[in-house]
Length: 122
Image (cartoon, rainbow, N blue to C red; front, side, top):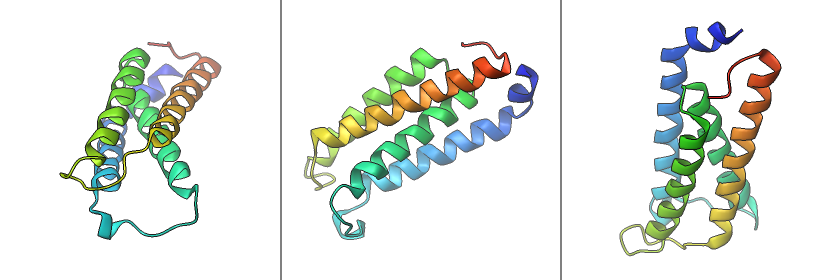
C-alpha cells in the first residue's frame, strides 16, 4: 500500500502547496478582509488549517519530525507577525494553541493512517 502514497507524489505536493497558499491568505489577510464570526470560530479555523497543513505535508513526504517542528514554528511566527503593524491583526496565544493542536492531530492521524496501511512512519 505504500506505493499508493508514492504514486500520488505530484498530487500530494500540489495539495500541500495549495494548503500553504491558503494558510498564507487566511493568516495574513488584512483585518478588513477577515469576516466576523461568533466567538471561538477562529480557533476552529486555526485548528482545521493546521491539521490540513500537517496531513498534506505528511502526504507529500515530509518527515513527521520536520512537519511537526516546522509547522509549530510557522504557527508561532504567524501569530507574532499578526501582532505587528505589518499585518495589524491580533496575536493570540490561544490561536497558537489551536494551531499546535491541529498539527499534532494531523501528524497523529497520518501516523494512524500509515500504520493501518502498512506504510513506513518516516
